[in-house]
Length: 245
Image (tube, rainbow, N blue to C red; front, top):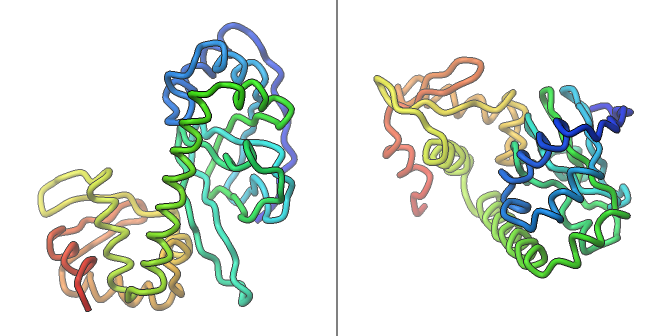
């Protein structure tokens, strides 16, 4: 992964502000906030474009900005002492990354990177005061942080207590429930950019992950292309995901 030097776009034209405001209104954190607050963000945010492999921030970097995803996808990960990677969060359009910086000035405890072309809005720390002075925003931020805590708890449970087959099945069942598309023969879900990324999402080595996928394919449970997977029996996979064993 490479750290990219970004060019900040200081375009404050009406069309740019309206485009940024439209992005913020779709955000789970900023949507329906007072118009003055969103206008403050839209005016002072800087746009960055990242390529696959670029890093948004590294572990131990200063927590001096938050990012709002405009398009693309950002992965947040931690590293083990043996170099193994674990993706702890996936952020898509409208999501906020590094929100802990709004209430904590310590160093980052994760690394954030992208696997494909991605665009984000960056808001620096010296613009935070307007946000944190708004009670409704603080309530929304607290709710988001609680959600993050529950997600981390669920991830720890899955990684520590469940077999590979169950962890992988849980990933695809969740994908089927959230964005699955029914078609003849089953349900189609998007695949991560690579098996390495998928392996990092469920704390597995790539060879073991591939072996499990191949076993499912031989049984007829799944088939896949580079970008999507067809699950022929979602309920069978759901049973694998939540089997008590």
